Image 1 (cartoon, rainbow, N blue to C red):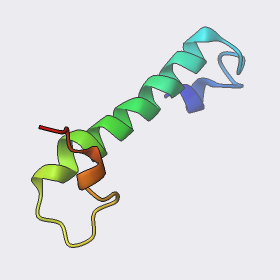
Image 2 (image 1 turned 60 degrees about the vertical axis):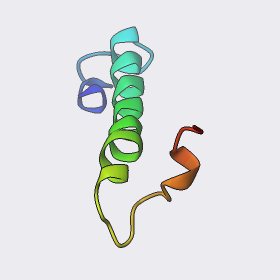
Image 3 (image 1 turned 30 degrees about the vertical axis):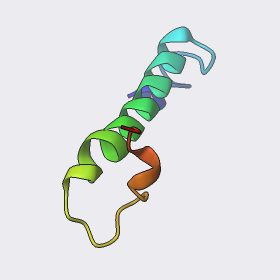
Image 4 (image 1 turned 45 degrees about the vertical axis):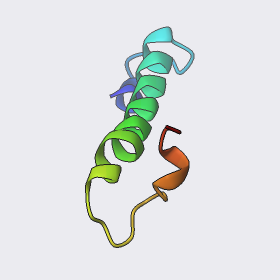
Length: 56
């Protein structure tokens, strides 16, 4: 959403554009690596799970 609004509706340096791009990036990382992939039996995950597991 931030990328589609940048340059046409709002300027690239607008806080609205910057916040939506940053939040979208971190949401993608958190969902794919921390919440989604460790719980599925994938043959080839995007990232190896052990480095992202919390030490117990």
